[in-house]
Length: 195
Length: 195
DNA sequence: TATTTTATCCATCAAATGCTGGAAGCAGTG
DNA sequence: CACTGCTTCCAGCATTTGATGGATAAAATA
Image (cartoon, rainbow over all chains, first blue to last red; front, side):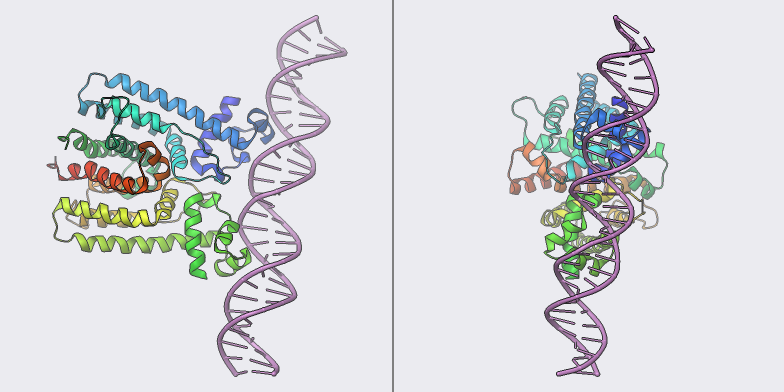
Protein backbone atom coordinates (compact mmCIF):
# COMPACT_ATOMS: atom_id res chain seq x y z
CA UNK A 1 0.00 0.00 0.00
CA UNK A 2 2.76 2.35 0.99
CA UNK A 3 4.47 1.75 -2.34
CA UNK A 4 1.19 2.10 -4.20
CA UNK A 5 0.65 5.52 -2.67
CA UNK A 6 4.20 6.55 -3.52
CA UNK A 7 3.73 5.60 -7.15
CA UNK A 8 0.44 7.44 -7.38
CA UNK A 9 1.90 10.47 -5.67
CA UNK A 10 4.71 10.59 -8.18
CA UNK A 11 2.25 10.71 -11.03
CA UNK A 12 -0.02 13.34 -9.55
CA UNK A 13 2.81 15.55 -8.32
CA UNK A 14 4.37 15.17 -11.75
CA UNK A 15 1.25 16.36 -13.48
CA UNK A 16 0.19 19.19 -11.26
CA UNK A 17 3.24 20.15 -9.25
CA UNK A 18 3.44 20.38 -5.50
CA UNK A 19 0.85 23.07 -4.93
CA UNK A 20 -1.36 21.87 -7.73
CA UNK A 21 -1.67 18.51 -6.05
CA UNK A 22 -3.96 17.92 -3.09
CA UNK A 23 -3.64 14.97 -0.77
CA UNK A 24 -7.22 14.13 -1.68
CA UNK A 25 -6.25 13.87 -5.34
CA UNK A 26 -3.56 11.34 -4.54
CA UNK A 27 -5.79 9.35 -2.21
CA UNK A 28 -8.54 9.30 -4.80
CA UNK A 29 -6.19 8.07 -7.51
CA UNK A 30 -5.24 5.15 -5.27
CA UNK A 31 -8.82 4.60 -4.22
CA UNK A 32 -8.32 5.12 -0.50
CA UNK A 33 -9.26 7.62 2.16
CA UNK A 34 -6.95 10.56 2.91
CA UNK A 35 -6.55 9.31 6.44
CA UNK A 36 -4.99 6.14 5.13
CA UNK A 37 -2.57 8.20 3.14
CA UNK A 38 -1.62 10.21 6.20
CA UNK A 39 -1.32 7.06 8.22
CA UNK A 40 1.36 5.75 5.87
CA UNK A 41 3.19 8.87 4.90
CA UNK A 42 2.48 11.64 7.35
CA UNK A 43 2.63 15.16 6.03
CA UNK A 44 2.22 16.04 2.38
CA UNK A 45 5.71 17.48 2.34
CA UNK A 46 7.17 14.21 3.66
CA UNK A 47 5.45 12.26 0.93
CA UNK A 48 6.75 14.73 -1.62
CA UNK A 49 10.29 14.37 -0.37
CA UNK A 50 9.96 10.62 -0.39
CA UNK A 51 8.99 10.78 -4.03
CA UNK A 52 12.12 12.79 -4.72
CA UNK A 53 14.36 10.30 -2.95
CA UNK A 54 12.70 7.39 -4.69
CA UNK A 55 13.16 9.03 -8.05
CA UNK A 56 16.74 9.88 -7.25
CA UNK A 57 17.55 6.25 -6.73
CA UNK A 58 15.70 5.12 -9.84
CA UNK A 59 17.57 7.53 -12.05
CA UNK A 60 20.87 6.68 -10.49
CA UNK A 61 20.24 3.06 -11.42
CA UNK A 62 19.28 4.00 -14.95
CA UNK A 63 22.47 5.98 -15.42
CA UNK A 64 24.57 3.12 -14.11
CA UNK A 65 22.85 0.90 -16.63
CA UNK A 66 23.73 3.29 -19.43
CA UNK A 67 27.28 3.67 -18.21
CA UNK A 68 27.63 -0.06 -18.37
CA UNK A 69 26.17 -0.33 -21.87
CA UNK A 70 28.38 2.32 -23.45
CA UNK A 71 31.67 1.09 -22.11
CA UNK A 72 34.30 0.80 -24.80
CA UNK A 73 32.13 2.17 -27.58
CA UNK A 74 32.94 5.17 -29.73
CA UNK A 75 31.72 8.60 -28.70
CA UNK A 76 29.06 8.65 -31.38
CA UNK A 77 27.79 5.25 -30.35
CA UNK A 78 27.87 6.22 -26.69
CA UNK A 79 25.69 9.24 -27.37
CA UNK A 80 23.29 7.25 -29.49
CA UNK A 81 22.86 4.58 -26.87
CA UNK A 82 22.47 7.09 -24.08
CA UNK A 83 19.81 8.99 -25.96
CA UNK A 84 17.93 5.83 -26.90
CA UNK A 85 17.95 4.34 -23.42
CA UNK A 86 16.99 7.54 -21.64
CA UNK A 87 14.24 8.29 -24.13
CA UNK A 88 12.80 4.81 -23.84
CA UNK A 89 12.83 4.98 -20.08
CA UNK A 90 11.32 8.44 -19.87
CA UNK A 91 8.71 7.91 -22.55
CA UNK A 92 7.57 4.89 -20.55
CA UNK A 93 7.46 6.96 -17.39
CA UNK A 94 6.50 10.43 -18.50
CA UNK A 95 5.66 11.55 -14.99
CA UNK A 96 9.34 11.28 -14.17
CA UNK A 97 10.54 14.02 -16.45
CA UNK A 98 7.60 16.19 -15.54
CA UNK A 99 8.34 15.84 -11.89
CA UNK A 100 11.99 16.70 -12.37
CA UNK A 101 11.19 19.77 -14.41
CA UNK A 102 8.92 21.00 -11.65
CA UNK A 103 11.79 20.58 -9.26
CA UNK A 104 14.08 22.62 -11.47
CA UNK A 105 11.85 25.52 -12.27
CA UNK A 106 9.11 25.75 -9.71
CA UNK A 107 9.43 27.29 -6.34
CA UNK A 108 7.52 25.86 -3.45
CA UNK A 109 5.85 28.11 -0.93
CA UNK A 110 7.52 27.82 2.43
CA UNK A 111 10.88 27.20 0.83
CA UNK A 112 12.73 24.01 1.81
CA UNK A 113 15.88 23.40 -0.07
CA UNK A 114 15.28 19.94 -1.41
CA UNK A 115 18.22 18.41 -3.08
CA UNK A 116 17.73 16.46 -6.22
CA UNK A 117 21.21 15.17 -6.80
CA UNK A 118 21.63 16.22 -10.37
CA UNK A 119 25.08 17.57 -9.81
CA UNK A 120 26.38 14.12 -9.13
CA UNK A 121 24.70 12.70 -12.21
CA UNK A 122 25.99 15.39 -14.48
CA UNK A 123 29.59 14.69 -13.55
CA UNK A 124 29.15 10.97 -13.99
CA UNK A 125 27.57 11.41 -17.38
CA UNK A 126 30.33 13.75 -18.49
CA UNK A 127 32.88 11.09 -17.64
CA UNK A 128 30.92 8.19 -19.09
CA UNK A 129 30.56 10.11 -22.34
CA UNK A 130 34.22 10.85 -22.43
CA UNK A 131 33.79 14.60 -22.13
CA UNK A 132 35.99 14.67 -19.09
CA UNK A 133 38.89 12.52 -18.12
CA UNK A 134 39.65 13.44 -14.56
CA UNK A 135 36.86 12.77 -12.10
CA UNK A 136 38.19 15.52 -9.90
CA UNK A 137 38.22 18.22 -12.49
CA UNK A 138 35.39 18.38 -14.95
CA UNK A 139 35.45 21.42 -17.23
CA UNK A 140 32.55 23.85 -16.90
CA UNK A 141 31.95 23.46 -20.60
CA UNK A 142 31.52 19.72 -20.28
CA UNK A 143 29.08 20.06 -17.41
CA UNK A 144 27.08 22.74 -19.15
CA UNK A 145 26.85 20.60 -22.26
CA UNK A 146 25.57 17.65 -20.34
CA UNK A 147 22.99 19.82 -18.63
CA UNK A 148 21.82 21.07 -21.99
CA UNK A 149 21.44 17.55 -23.32
CA UNK A 150 19.74 16.29 -20.21
CA UNK A 151 17.27 19.16 -20.31
CA UNK A 152 16.52 18.66 -23.96
CA UNK A 153 15.53 15.10 -23.31
CA UNK A 154 13.29 16.02 -20.40
CA UNK A 155 11.65 18.78 -22.35
CA UNK A 156 10.71 16.69 -25.31
CA UNK A 157 9.20 14.01 -23.10
CA UNK A 158 7.28 16.31 -20.81
CA UNK A 159 6.25 18.65 -23.54
CA UNK A 160 4.80 16.01 -25.82
CA UNK A 161 1.24 17.24 -25.36
CA UNK A 162 2.39 20.69 -26.23
CA UNK A 163 4.79 19.99 -29.07
CA UNK A 164 3.36 16.99 -30.84
CA UNK A 165 0.31 18.86 -32.19
CA UNK A 166 2.71 21.40 -33.63
CA UNK A 167 4.49 18.69 -35.55
CA UNK A 168 1.22 17.05 -36.46
CA UNK A 169 2.41 13.49 -35.94
CA UNK A 170 1.40 10.50 -33.80
CA UNK A 171 2.93 9.31 -30.58
CA UNK A 172 5.15 6.61 -32.05
CA UNK A 173 6.45 8.89 -34.74
CA UNK A 174 7.04 11.55 -32.11
CA UNK A 175 9.38 9.24 -30.26
CA UNK A 176 11.36 8.64 -33.42
CA UNK A 177 11.51 12.33 -34.24
CA UNK A 178 12.66 13.20 -30.75
CA UNK A 179 15.45 10.65 -30.81
CA UNK A 180 16.52 11.73 -34.26
CA UNK A 181 16.44 15.39 -33.41
CA UNK A 182 18.46 14.89 -30.26
CA UNK A 183 21.06 12.90 -32.16
CA UNK A 184 21.01 15.36 -35.03
CA UNK A 185 21.73 18.24 -32.71
CA UNK A 186 23.97 16.65 -30.15
CA UNK A 187 26.25 14.30 -31.95
CA UNK A 188 27.84 16.86 -34.25
CA UNK A 189 28.45 19.15 -31.31
CA UNK A 190 30.30 16.57 -29.30
CA UNK A 191 32.17 14.90 -32.11
CA UNK A 192 33.44 18.11 -33.65
CA UNK A 193 37.08 18.90 -33.25
CA UNK A 194 37.43 20.44 -29.81
CA UNK A 195 38.40 24.10 -29.98
CA UNK B 1 -2.36 50.25 -11.45
CA UNK B 2 -3.83 47.66 -13.74
CA UNK B 3 -0.51 47.31 -15.52
CA UNK B 4 1.36 47.23 -12.24
CA UNK B 5 -0.73 44.31 -11.08
CA UNK B 6 -0.20 42.51 -14.37
CA UNK B 7 3.57 42.86 -14.09
CA UNK B 8 3.58 41.63 -10.52
CA UNK B 9 1.29 38.73 -11.40
CA UNK B 10 3.65 37.66 -14.15
CA UNK B 11 6.50 37.48 -11.69
CA UNK B 12 4.68 35.60 -8.98
CA UNK B 13 2.97 33.19 -11.37
CA UNK B 14 6.36 32.65 -12.97
CA UNK B 15 7.95 31.74 -9.67
CA UNK B 16 5.29 29.60 -8.12
CA UNK B 17 3.06 28.50 -10.95
CA UNK B 18 -0.69 28.91 -11.11
CA UNK B 19 -1.63 26.89 -8.07
CA UNK B 20 1.41 27.95 -6.11
CA UNK B 21 0.34 31.54 -6.44
CA UNK B 22 -2.39 33.06 -4.31
CA UNK B 23 -4.16 36.27 -5.16
CA UNK B 24 -2.99 37.57 -1.81
CA UNK B 25 0.63 37.01 -2.79
CA UNK B 26 0.19 39.11 -5.89
CA UNK B 27 -1.69 41.84 -4.05
CA UNK B 28 0.93 41.95 -1.36
CA UNK B 29 3.78 42.22 -3.87
CA UNK B 30 2.03 45.26 -5.35
CA UNK B 31 1.20 46.63 -1.94
CA UNK B 32 -2.56 46.68 -2.33
CA UNK B 33 -5.58 44.89 -0.93
CA UNK B 34 -6.89 41.80 -2.69
CA UNK B 35 -10.18 43.57 -3.30
CA UNK B 36 -8.37 46.12 -5.41
CA UNK B 37 -6.85 43.34 -7.41
CA UNK B 38 -10.24 41.76 -7.99
CA UNK B 39 -11.69 45.14 -8.86
CA UNK B 40 -9.24 45.51 -11.71
CA UNK B 41 -8.86 41.99 -12.97
CA UNK B 42 -11.75 39.87 -11.77
CA UNK B 43 -11.07 36.18 -11.29
CA UNK B 44 -7.62 34.76 -10.71
CA UNK B 45 -7.95 32.77 -13.91
CA UNK B 46 -8.70 35.89 -15.93
CA UNK B 47 -5.62 37.58 -14.59
CA UNK B 48 -3.59 34.50 -15.41
CA UNK B 49 -4.86 34.42 -18.97
CA UNK B 50 -4.15 38.11 -19.32
CA UNK B 51 -0.57 37.46 -18.33
CA UNK B 52 -0.35 34.84 -21.04
CA UNK B 53 -1.72 37.15 -23.69
CA UNK B 54 0.56 39.95 -22.59
CA UNK B 55 3.57 37.66 -22.74
CA UNK B 56 2.52 36.36 -26.11
CA UNK B 57 2.65 39.80 -27.57
CA UNK B 58 5.95 40.65 -25.94
CA UNK B 59 7.65 37.57 -27.34
CA UNK B 60 6.17 38.09 -30.74
CA UNK B 61 7.76 41.52 -30.79
CA UNK B 62 11.09 40.13 -29.66
CA UNK B 63 11.10 37.55 -32.42
CA UNK B 64 10.27 40.17 -35.02
CA UNK B 65 13.21 42.16 -33.72
CA UNK B 66 15.48 39.16 -34.15
CA UNK B 67 14.10 38.38 -37.57
CA UNK B 68 14.94 41.90 -38.59
CA UNK B 69 18.46 41.76 -37.18
CA UNK B 70 19.49 38.53 -38.86
CA UNK B 71 18.31 39.38 -42.34
CA UNK B 72 20.93 38.68 -44.94
CA UNK B 73 23.47 37.23 -42.55
CA UNK B 74 25.02 33.81 -42.79
CA UNK B 75 23.41 30.89 -40.98
CA UNK B 76 26.13 30.83 -38.35
CA UNK B 77 25.76 34.54 -37.70
CA UNK B 78 21.98 34.25 -37.63
CA UNK B 79 22.17 31.60 -34.96
CA UNK B 80 24.68 33.57 -32.93
CA UNK B 81 22.59 36.71 -33.01
CA UNK B 82 19.40 34.87 -32.18
CA UNK B 83 21.00 33.17 -29.21
CA UNK B 84 22.54 36.40 -27.94
CA UNK B 85 19.40 38.46 -28.25
CA UNK B 86 17.10 35.88 -26.73
CA UNK B 87 19.50 35.21 -23.88
CA UNK B 88 19.89 38.90 -23.10
CA UNK B 89 16.15 39.42 -23.11
CA UNK B 90 15.36 36.38 -20.98
CA UNK B 91 18.18 36.89 -18.51
CA UNK B 92 16.80 40.38 -17.95
CA UNK B 93 13.31 38.99 -17.47
CA UNK B 94 13.80 35.59 -15.90
CA UNK B 95 10.18 35.31 -14.88
CA UNK B 96 9.31 35.06 -18.54
CA UNK B 97 11.01 31.77 -19.22
CA UNK B 98 9.84 30.40 -15.94
CA UNK B 99 6.27 31.26 -16.74
CA UNK B 100 6.48 29.68 -20.17
CA UNK B 101 7.96 26.47 -18.82
CA UNK B 102 5.10 26.20 -16.36
CA UNK B 103 2.73 26.53 -19.27
CA UNK B 104 4.46 23.75 -21.16
CA UNK B 105 4.79 21.19 -18.43
CA UNK B 106 2.35 21.95 -15.70
CA UNK B 107 -1.27 21.02 -15.75
CA UNK B 108 -3.79 23.26 -14.14
CA UNK B 109 -6.64 21.86 -12.12
CA UNK B 110 -9.95 22.46 -13.79
CA UNK B 111 -8.40 22.16 -17.22
CA UNK B 112 -8.81 25.10 -19.59
CA UNK B 113 -6.96 24.75 -22.80
CA UNK B 114 -4.99 27.94 -22.84
CA UNK B 115 -3.13 28.57 -25.99
CA UNK B 116 0.30 30.00 -25.87
CA UNK B 117 0.98 30.50 -29.53
CA UNK B 118 4.31 28.75 -29.73
CA UNK B 119 3.41 26.92 -32.88
CA UNK B 120 3.34 30.15 -34.79
CA UNK B 121 6.66 31.27 -33.40
CA UNK B 122 8.37 28.02 -34.17
CA UNK B 123 7.48 28.20 -37.83
CA UNK B 124 8.60 31.79 -38.09
CA UNK B 125 11.90 31.04 -36.45
CA UNK B 126 12.49 28.07 -38.71
CA UNK B 127 12.06 30.31 -41.71
CA UNK B 128 14.07 33.20 -40.31
CA UNK B 129 16.91 30.82 -39.59
CA UNK B 130 16.78 29.43 -43.07
CA UNK B 131 15.82 25.93 -41.96
CA UNK B 132 12.74 26.02 -44.11
CA UNK B 133 12.11 27.77 -47.37
CA UNK B 134 8.42 27.39 -47.98
CA UNK B 135 6.20 29.00 -45.35
CA UNK B 136 3.50 26.51 -46.18
CA UNK B 137 5.57 23.42 -45.70
CA UNK B 138 8.02 23.33 -42.87
CA UNK B 139 9.72 19.96 -42.36
CA UNK B 140 9.04 18.18 -39.09
CA UNK B 141 12.77 17.99 -38.54
CA UNK B 142 13.14 21.76 -38.79
CA UNK B 143 10.33 22.40 -36.34
CA UNK B 144 11.62 19.84 -33.89
CA UNK B 145 15.07 21.38 -34.03
CA UNK B 146 13.75 24.83 -33.32
CA UNK B 147 11.74 23.50 -30.39
CA UNK B 148 14.86 21.89 -28.99
CA UNK B 149 16.81 25.12 -29.26
CA UNK B 150 14.01 27.22 -27.84
CA UNK B 151 13.68 24.88 -24.89
CA UNK B 152 17.38 24.82 -24.23
CA UNK B 153 17.41 28.56 -23.91
CA UNK B 154 14.45 28.62 -21.54
CA UNK B 155 15.92 25.88 -19.42
CA UNK B 156 19.23 27.53 -18.86
CA UNK B 157 17.60 30.80 -17.88
CA UNK B 158 14.99 29.35 -15.58
CA UNK B 159 17.28 26.77 -14.13
CA UNK B 160 20.03 29.16 -13.17
CA UNK B 161 19.48 28.70 -9.45
CA UNK B 162 19.68 25.00 -9.96
CA UNK B 163 22.51 24.71 -12.45
CA UNK B 164 24.84 27.53 -11.56
CA UNK B 165 25.93 26.04 -8.23
CA UNK B 166 26.81 22.87 -10.11
CA UNK B 167 29.13 24.83 -12.36
CA UNK B 168 30.41 26.84 -9.44
CA UNK B 169 30.52 30.16 -11.26
CA UNK B 170 28.99 33.61 -10.81
CA UNK B 171 25.98 35.09 -12.55
CA UNK B 172 27.86 37.02 -15.22
CA UNK B 173 30.05 34.09 -16.07
CA UNK B 174 26.98 31.90 -16.17
CA UNK B 175 25.50 34.06 -18.91
CA UNK B 176 28.66 33.69 -20.94
CA UNK B 177 28.80 29.93 -20.42
CA UNK B 178 25.16 29.54 -21.40
CA UNK B 179 25.60 31.48 -24.61
CA UNK B 180 28.77 29.61 -25.46
CA UNK B 181 27.27 26.24 -24.72
CA UNK B 182 24.21 26.94 -26.78
CA UNK B 183 26.35 28.04 -29.69
CA UNK B 184 28.72 25.15 -29.20
CA UNK B 185 25.92 22.66 -29.39
CA UNK B 186 23.61 24.25 -31.88
CA UNK B 187 25.74 25.78 -34.55
CA UNK B 188 27.51 22.59 -35.64
CA UNK B 189 24.19 20.83 -35.83
CA UNK B 190 22.62 23.34 -38.14
CA UNK B 191 25.62 24.08 -40.26
CA UNK B 192 26.55 20.48 -40.89
CA UNK B 193 25.90 19.12 -44.33
CA UNK B 194 22.22 18.17 -44.41
CA UNK B 195 21.71 14.46 -44.69
C1' DT C 1 -20.80 73.21 -4.35
C1' DA C 2 -23.44 69.03 -5.27
C1' DT C 3 -23.40 64.78 -7.70
C1' DT C 4 -21.67 61.09 -9.98
C1' DT C 5 -17.92 58.02 -11.02
C1' DT C 6 -13.80 55.68 -9.93
C1' DA C 7 -10.73 53.47 -6.86
C1' DT C 8 -9.40 51.52 -2.49
C1' DC C 9 -9.92 49.01 1.75
C1' DC C 10 -12.12 46.33 5.74
C1' DA C 11 -14.73 42.61 7.07
C1' DT C 12 -16.44 38.53 5.84
C1' DC C 13 -18.25 34.30 3.49
C1' DA C 14 -18.09 29.66 1.38
C1' DA C 15 -15.35 26.27 -0.34
C1' DA C 16 -11.10 23.86 -0.48
C1' DT C 17 -7.32 21.88 1.82
C1' DG C 18 -3.98 20.02 5.26
C1' DC C 19 -4.43 17.25 8.92
C1' DT C 20 -6.31 14.49 13.19
C1' DG C 21 -9.20 11.67 16.68
C1' DG C 22 -11.62 7.92 17.33
C1' DA C 23 -14.35 4.08 15.96
C1' DA C 24 -14.50 -0.11 13.29
C1' DG C 25 -12.61 -3.98 10.71
C1' DC C 26 -9.35 -7.69 10.43
C1' DA C 27 -5.52 -10.64 10.82
C1' DG C 28 -2.69 -13.31 13.87
C1' DT C 29 -1.76 -15.39 18.73
C1' DG C 30 -2.75 -17.07 23.32
C1' DC D 1 -13.18 -16.46 22.32
C1' DA D 2 -10.36 -12.58 24.01
C1' DC D 3 -6.51 -9.79 23.22
C1' DT D 4 -3.24 -7.29 20.46
C1' DG D 5 -1.49 -4.76 16.67
C1' DC D 6 -2.12 -3.10 12.25
C1' DT D 7 -4.96 -0.88 8.73
C1' DT D 8 -8.83 1.65 7.04
C1' DC D 9 -12.47 4.91 7.08
C1' DC D 10 -15.91 8.53 8.73
C1' DA D 11 -16.49 12.84 10.60
C1' DG D 12 -14.72 16.99 11.63
C1' DC D 13 -11.41 20.91 12.92
C1' DA D 14 -8.42 24.94 11.72
C1' DT D 15 -6.42 27.41 8.20
C1' DT D 16 -6.00 29.00 3.64
C1' DT D 17 -7.82 30.77 -0.35
C1' DG D 18 -10.91 32.57 -4.02
C1' DA D 19 -14.23 35.85 -4.10
C1' DT D 20 -17.81 39.62 -2.66
C1' DG D 21 -20.62 43.51 -0.31
C1' DG D 22 -20.52 47.68 1.49
C1' DA D 23 -18.34 51.71 3.54
C1' DT D 24 -15.12 55.35 2.46
C1' DA D 25 -12.29 58.34 0.05
C1' DA D 26 -10.68 60.58 -4.03
C1' DA D 27 -11.45 62.34 -8.48
C1' DA D 28 -14.13 63.85 -12.13
C1' DT D 29 -18.22 66.23 -13.72
C1' DA D 30 -22.06 69.19 -13.70
